[in-house]
Length: 374
Ligand SMILES: Cc1ncc(COP(=O)(O)O)c(C=O)c1O
Image (cartoon, rainbow, N blue to C red; front, side, top):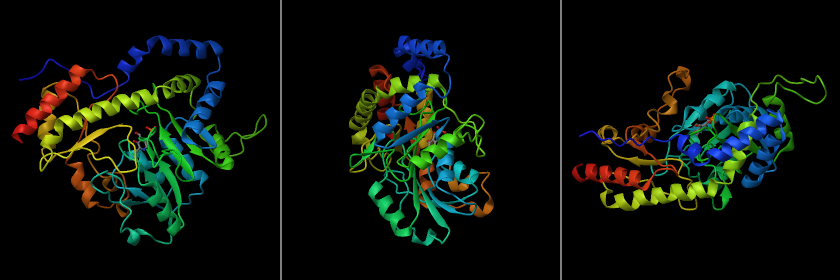
C-alpha cells in the first residue's frame, strides 16, 4: 500500500524556513552594501575557515571541483603525472585530475569504510606517480597517518579531498588539514551547504594561496591591469560567503543532530544486522559528521523500491566505480573488485537536522518491516 507521507532525501528548503529571517537579513546587508565580489564578507569567511581547519590560509572558490583543480595546478602537476585516487567517490574526485592532463590511477577500497585501501598497492606505483588524492568519504576520515607515511615513503604530494567530511577529524586533526592543499565543498547537499555552488582551498603555503587567488580571478596579479597568468573565473559571491559564515556557527549543532539520527537508526536496526544488512561502521580514531548514512544490503533495489512506495526518498552513492566512467579514455579505465561489489549494495537514507521524529520513526518502521522478512 502506498503512503501519504513524503520524506525527501534532503535539500535546503527546510533549513531556509528555520532561519528565514536571518538569511533575508544577510542578503539585505550584502545587496545594500553593493560589494558583491572580493569583499570583506569573503575575507571573513576565509579567515573563519582557516581557523576552524587549523590552516594558515583559505581561498574561497566557486566549487570544490575548482579547488581540487587549482590545488593540482599550484602543486605543479604536469601532463602525464599519475595521481592515485579512490575507485569509489563522486565524479569530481576524478574530473580535476583529467582536466589537469594527469592520469588517474585507481585504488580499490576497504569494505567497512568505503575509502581507499593503501595496503598492497605498491604495484600501482611507477616513476610517474606524483600525487595522491586523499578522499574522505560519507563524513568520516581516512587514516591520515597512514596516508602521510605512504606519501612520504613514495615521495608523492598529498592533496586532500575533504569535500564530504568538513567538521570531522582523525585523532583530533580536522579534515582540511592533511597534505599540501585541502579542498572542501559547500555544495547544497553537504553538512554545511550553500544556497548554490561553493568550495574552498586550504593550505599552509602563502605562495600556493596567492597563486590560487590569482587563478580564481582571471590570473589577476598586482597593479591596475596586471593579468599576469592565464586564469579562470571561480569567485565566490559575497552573499554566499556571508550566509556560509553564519552557517559555520551552526556546524556543531547540525552535526549533533545528524549524529542523534544516525545513532537512532543504528540502535533500532542493529538486531537485524547480519547476512542481509550491514550498518555503517565508524573508523576508530575518526569522528563522523554523518554527511551520509550508508547501509549495505544485497536486497538494495528491492528495499529502495519498497521505501519509495512508502514515501521515503533514498539515493545510491555510487552506482558505478570511477574507473568505469564512460568518458574515461580506454587506457585509463580500471576495475576495482570490492568497490564494484559495493556499488550494488549501498543505499543512503535521509539524514538531516530538520527530519522530524515522526519521519525518523516512519523510516525505521519500514526498514524493520522489510528486514523482518528478508
Ligand atoms: C568527494 C567529493 N569530491 C569533490 C566534490 C566536488 O564538490 P563541488 O560540488 O563543490 O564541486 C564532491 C561534491 O559533491 C564530493 O562529494
